[in-house]
Image (cartoon, rainbow, N blue to C red; front, side, top):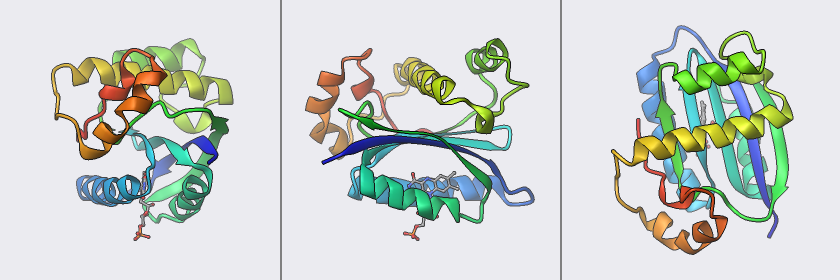
Length: 174
Ligand SMILES: Cc1cc2nc3c(=O)[nH]c(=O)nc-3n(C[C@H](O)[C@H](O)[C@H](O)COP(=O)(O)O)c2cc1C
């Protein structure tokens, strides 16, 4: 089995009902991703989505083709796609947030003109993913939703990942 990590960003179509879109995305994605062993994180801020997906290559690539046609998204930009030897996440989570200081700083320090995930370079994209995981880990300490079935199943994988207990950290937070 070939595992990949795929990250993309997109601006959202304006004049749509944001909260109902987010709820709908959360529902479809959680269901599909769980059934198909896709893991990742989705962030939304300032009219932009950023998603990092990990899973079996064909499944992730096929889902990305569907995503590209999603009428809630404007311009979908593929930022990075690479083979990985193991998973770094063990569930899919979604977060809707207003600007976080650390993220703000990340975009400033890397000379982006504000929060513009569609412009992230391949290298910065990886660093950004690590930053998001770090931020989420901090929040998760206060907001544990317990282990989901899939998380239990993948504990052994996440143990091997070994980066700051990230394998235990994912909950679904909206
Ligand atoms: C920002 C964004 C992120 C999404 N992420 C996922 C995802 O991770 N997994 C997924 O199955 N669908 C995701 N979707 C939904 C898909 O684009 C698509 O609507 C859905 O997969 C269609 O499912 P269906 O073909 O089963 O009806 C996302 C949609 C948006 C707008």
